[in-house]
Structure formats: structure tokens, C-alpha cells
Amino acid sequence: MSNLLIGVTGGIAAYKIPELVRLFIKGGYDVKTVLTKNAGLFVTKETLEMLTGNKVYTDNFSQEDIVNAEHIELAKWADVILIAPATFNTIGKIISGIADNLLTSIIAAADRKKIIFSPSMNVNMWNNPIFQENLKKLTDYGFTLIEPGNGYLACGDTGRGRLPEIETIFAIVKRHIDKDDAYMGKRYIVTAGGTEEAIDPVRVITNRSSGKMGTEIAKQLYFKGADVVLVKGRTSLEIPPYLYTIEVHDTKSMLNSLKENISENTTLIMAAAISDFIVENQGNRKFHKDELNVLKLKENIDVTKTIREMFDIPIIGFALENGMNIEKAKEKLKKKRLNAIILNDISAIGNNNSSIRLIREDGYISGIISGSKEEIAVRIVEELKNI
Image (cartoon, rainbow, N blue to C red; front, side, top):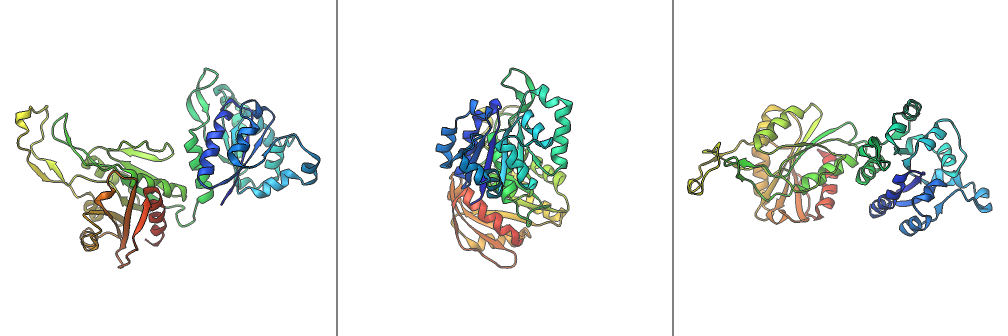
């Protein structure tokens, strides 16, 4: 279990912090919080104590706190320190070497490499040249900065300065904690969802793929510190804002996106459900019902095979079979010259739970891995260390 200390300063966005705390608690972190005096105007100590199950630290020092050098102990306890929202004032104090409250004292005593700032303020404060100089100093000193969002602000202005989405803050902090040298500096392209092949300008041929497995794999790779590109076909999923995503619709656009984004240090994970056939007699106008009695189909482009012929990179494919048919998966592995293939059953379509087996080109076959798609994605990503 990782120890996370969240420092909350006096900005209006502090009211979002309980939601962020819930995410970290659900993610298995031990969370402690520090409130500055003004932060208490926006979120209560009692709320955070109830959510974390831990004491909330404030500037109301007791004699015991002073004797125990509480700021030193908290700086040592935390694996990561997140300051959210980080205000103009608190950042200015820290850059100026001022440690006049508990939070700034903790920051002064902590390793800079484990401190993350998530600024939030009015757009004019954000653009203030003094503040921009302070931001530059933050990164120069080795602190991590989460860029704020753009949009409507609590004061009524519009522009830079919004606290990022809570899910984005969670993901960036998790990536900071969970990063693994085995994935750092590596680039992964993950395809997800189904393709749509046009019948006419209104109708398409598609499939029931939800895109969940591919998206979960992309998320887990991101948490490990990898450079991740998600190439997404049709899906109803809400894609996390922290994932770099390219949206495609048909097989041709997916193939073109892959060709444009594959580089020398890329591993490709083909989790998308690509249509096996396209309509040969495709229309450029809407067909009437009586014109749809016969659709002529022809075999679609084999994206994985085409990429293999063009690029010498690791490729992991998927085999969706009627039952866990290992021999069928082996045939596909060999035919498409894959480095590994993930075998799953058609019962996985549309369900959150699944079972898979991973088969490598060297003959290794994993046992059956079952669970939610998120849990399976964690296991798949661990297996990628060996590919």
C-alpha cells in the first residue's frame, strides 16, 4: 500500500477534493490530508477524516505535534505528496522559501521528486508573469506539475486555470507512484472498439465489441509510465481524458492511423474488433429497402498482417473463439507472425468479466486468467514485460 499525503489550499476547487480522496481510497492508497487555514472555508476537516479514516492535519498545533516534529514525520511518511488545489499564494511561498504553516513546512522538508502540484486559480492570476516565473522555477527545481484545464471558471471568467478532471489527477499521481522502469521510454499503440464499414451513407456493418479490454490495457500501460496511443473505433465508453486517443471509424482509417504513428520503439496491441468483410456494392446514396435484399460482401483488409509486412515491431493480437480453442489461437499466431496472442471466448463481448490465456511465439501458454477486464488488463500488462 502506498502512502499519499494531499495538501489542500484555499481555492474554490478544494470542494472537489473529497471526490478525489474517494478515488485514491478505492485504489488502495493510505491517504492523509493537510488543510491550510483558508482551505477549511471550502472543505471540512470532518468530511476528510470520515473519508480517509485518518487524522486531518491543520495549523492548530498541539504541544505534542511540536515535540514530534509533525512536518518532518509527514514528509517521511508520504510516498507522494499532492498539493491540490495549489493556489497562487502557496506556490509563491514555496518558491520563495517561506515555510510559515504546516503544509509549506512539510514541502520544505520533503524530497522534491515526490511532490506534485495541481494549480487552480483565476485565468488572470495564472497568466500573471510573476506566477509564470514561479511555475518555471517549480519544474526547474524538480517538482512535478499537473497542467490546469481550460474553460469556465468559478469566478465567471473563461480560460486557463481550472482544476483538471479528478480522474486525470488520480491517473497522473498513480502513474507517478506505479511507474516501472520496464515500461519507461517505451511506446505502445493499443487498438480498441469495433470498426464500422459503410453500406450506404446511413447504414453500417459493425460488431458488438465494447472496446473495454483495449481501453483498460491502455490505462494500465499509462500507469506504468509508458508512452501510450489509443486508436479507438466505435465504442460507447467514455475514454479517460489523460489517454492520447485517435478516433477512427473504418478499417482503412485504422490502418492509416497505425502507419502514421508506429515508430521504431513501438509495440502494437491489436485489441480492436475489425470487420472481416466490407460491402462490395456500397452506395453513395441511401438505399431503399428493396435494394437491400442482396448485399455483396468481400474480404476486408487484414490490418495486423499488413502492419507485420511493413514494420518489424512486436505485435500482440487477440483471438476471439467459440470456447478457449488453443489450437485455433496458435494457428492465428503463426499465420500472422505475431509475438503473442491473447485468447478469449465470445462470452467476453459486452461483459465486464472475462477469461483469457496468453500464448507466446516461444510456446509459452499461460494458465486461465479470469476476472474483470480491468484485473485482466493488469495481468496482460505484466506479461508484456516478457515480450
